[in-house]
Length: 231
Image (cartoon, rainbow, N blue to C red; front, side):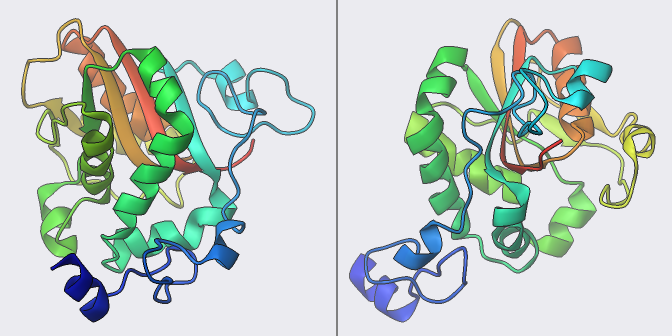
């Protein structure tokens, strides 16, 4: 059945969006186009550091965060097209590729954080209806299958529809997300939670979700994203 499915619906390479070679999830020539954030990343949020920075990015030196630590897989520039197609063009199959990448490169980090539960950043119900799925939930469930960690897609809900964060500055992002999330289940007390999302920019979304989890009693909140820019 899997062979027939691959023949009829071949996997698409997340970088070029063309059918990937048989049995592969990405074209060999495209793999090198995804730029991993290496050893030079912020020890708080995981964003890539500018050349003159050491240990912490400028944002994390200036502004406190509600989450405890974060990591990101790729530079935003190298993965932006793939994330856009995952998010807005129905390429849900990319989620498995990205989760496998997370698992291969960050399993040790996730183990060290001693995570009890994975929580995807939720979409508002109207946006989810329009899109048909939540890309963060797809990523969280694919990662959960690889790590064996439980995923709670209904733990946090987006109770208020917000405008897109893309064109907003830091203060506007924070105001946009004020009271946008609420706890829907109360089984987070004393747990270490991994919040999963696609992109890390200023951390406003991660902070808003982490804050409600902490208020509900979560012991630690960590953040894992696919891509982040440099400072």
